Image (tube, rainbow, N blue to C red; front, side, top):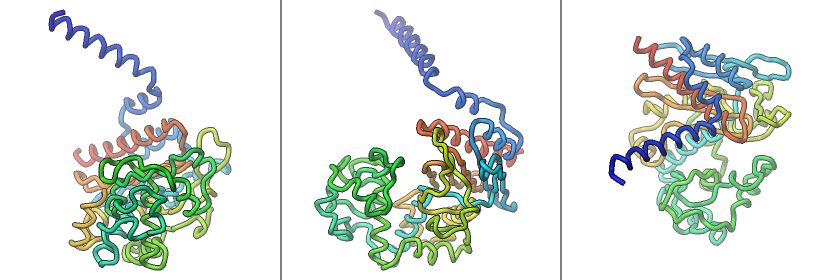
Length: 345
């Protein structure tokens, strides 16, 4: 077989692979991607509702303009309350940005050390978490510890633990997924442990520290540590495909308005939240954007430097196959594209 014949066979194989792969891609995702771009953010949200979301809210902070608030679908579909852009929402793993800021400030103040180990801070876990003597605080922040992810344990979301202690029990005595600093794997266990370390060092909760060092200085009044702290009528309902009930009353940690998350995110990115030393520490350990997922709630938070704009997006519908996660990412990217095109026009 000569080289020309080999290249022809390779092209045929690649073509067959491409055609075959299309049968495994949900057509709703393809359709959402190829539709003509709407003229406005609001039109994009209305279109997203047609794709299958029960509710969506978006906050846009463009430099030099007043913040813009958008909503589509339902705040509560049972009573047909329209989506409220100022509603409270379960921000899920976006809270890790606040944890990383707290670690940064405590390291800068000399109350924590990035090079101390899990064994140094929580010696009772030696022998219960593999490599505890070699897993540093830095590695936990960066998801390079090798500690298994507790939310990957069987039936975690169907029967969630009632406390941090119960959650941690799910992975104790489990083998490490890799040696410390040998790989990267996102693990919620890392941040549960970081919260416990902060609580032990300070003598009070990490959320109280958030209030003192992040929320109050920024004037943020619509960020909360727990569902127990809020008027639940203000919380956007959440729905999971195949589950018949509203998931609003399930406890999943921090809640905030899109605006509060947006103000925090801009302050994190523009340097006003951290002093120069803290900024150097933070940039060495964590990212400046995040997304989040718990049943019924998807959240996206990112600052776009090229257009000096913060975009926060909250979607109130999830599914087990994560089609709606991929769809939400497409919607988010289209919103940013709309904003870029308007900025350049």
